[in-house]
Image (cartoon, rainbow, N blue to C red; front, side, top):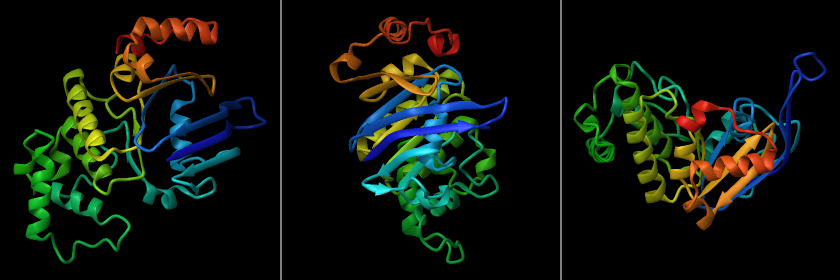
Amino acid sequence: MLEVKNIYKTFNPGTINEKTALDGVSLTLEDGDFVTVIGGNGAGKSTLLNAVAGTWLVDEGSIHIDGIDVTRLPEHKRAIYLGRVFQDPMTGTAATMGIEENLALAKRRGKFRSLRSGITSAEREEYFELLKILDLGLENRLTSKVGLLSGGQRQALTLLMATLKKPKLLLLDEHTAALDPKTAAKVLETTDRIVNRDQLTTLMITHNMKDAIAHGNRLIMMMNGKIILDIKGEEKKKLTVRDLLDQFEIASGEQFTNDSAILG
């Protein structure tokens, strides 16, 4: 479903601020894979996600989504294949519009978008049932402005919107990092439920080792723009934070120093 071949990305080339963010990264995700990506600051994990999304075009290499070469497609043309949830709960929704209106926009993605004809009673019933799975009481607040929701409620709604059209690839960009631990756990629980229900191929960037281990069927660790660990199957199921730290030290020859990633 996703094939990344030998991609490179350097920011500010030829200047004193030159930074190689991706250094020959190759990665293949099979249909239905749920891959978590972790690494310290500057490891390249967010650059990888942004390269797949088309936020930044890569300098070299290729990116295919479901067999389609999207390497040179701009971000807005890749959007038809992708669902994305950002770190900031304020991104991805229209704050001044109601919950049902935001869902209607997501449902009509790829079509001519207009609310002129209004939301039908059938659509409203569909949104009511969809919101119930979040278990946040939002199904009873369909007309509430999204800007009035808490960060966790808004992020859960964004997740629902991003998956409403069952994208070929779901990108989660540290989507619980700005939430308190209890709310983050709730959003991750909802993420698992939706991803498993729809068998969505998912790439989730996280700063939390425990979350990276607990979710998905495969874990990737990055460092200095390279993938240094790729753990899946039974090995991932048995993985502990201590095991992951030990493997990181063996693979990199260094100690992992990002306390927030270790402690969550």
